[in-house]
Image (cartoon, rainbow, N blue to C red; front, top):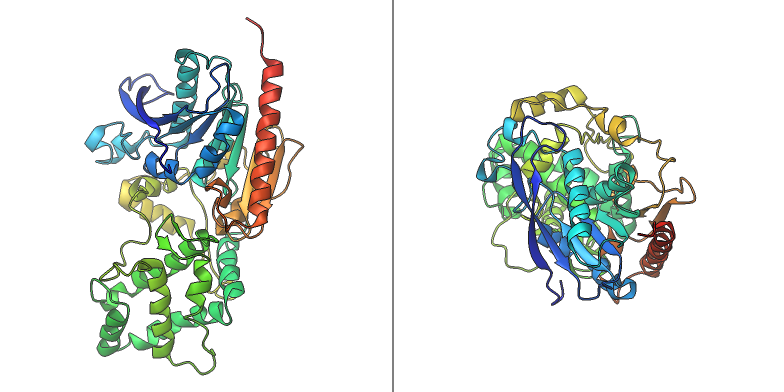
Length: 455
């Protein structure tokens, strides 16, 4: 984290916090930096780890490093079970569904709660330290849920880009892809229209073997396309546009891939054709150049691999398992209000796919049952921040629920932009959001100290 190194530490947790038959333990990794910590009860900023290697999230959460001195805070970044080095069954953790059975958000929250209590008990000076949970994306969901489930452990939470409502029957399944489309529509003339046209152009050109070969060459694909690959190829492109919307940052960044500033604007420069006159070949040539902005901005990539869209620091198998159990997030497209081919949300088909992959079936309503769904007004001291450019804001809390469950919207912010380091290119809206967030932190810390029982 910009030359400031956190210390790596290990704690032991129960594999199963909620049952008594499986009494094994595992090692959880967490990172600590206390260079600015006020050892007489200074606050602890606790990052609730996502679906990936915790060092990656530590290095991409500069906001915590930027505010540590002002708050006199200790920084803790806790790794989520089953990701990075925190594997409950070591190399066997992903071997079968029996070993994956303890990969749930509830178990992870219990890990975090136990770790915080352990830190406060064992670290000299931390006994009266107020703890604030911070997280982005799934980590943001966890930070909000940690405050909801364990209000005795954390005094407040910043949940950045946290789609806690992206579950069945809470928000329209098509809103996510509408926001992706709006990002491209605002970033260049005809940009979204030409992407919408590209799906049919792919069908037209790949109707012949020569066309299939041309497309593979035009995109510099590592493996030549076969007819049976076309659905996967389109899905790869679709996810590319989604990822660009998530990381449409105002400066050069390397979150999912190394990218230029405002990358969608750069992409759209390759897609400003007149839709009424552009040929399929010309259009797909532009699409291939646009894809290279995402996959080969550095110029070091000899070919494009359609089986990979994001960073290797994310744990795809683990997250897919979570989606196949309790993190059921419906997404759909209609091809009219968005720039994608129409695709309904089909829970039964999704359930069947999960069953064939893992031998499990998702519980569509479980997240609403265990975390309250839309009904969160009884909670307190939670900030939900969302960027207007971020498709995940479709399932986020973007309005104030109460005086202390509040929303901060950053109109020109992408995925948890507010959690990143301060940057000279930051729009004023994100600078303002960070100031508000720190003001809430200070309020919660003051409240917590007033409530502390002497002795």
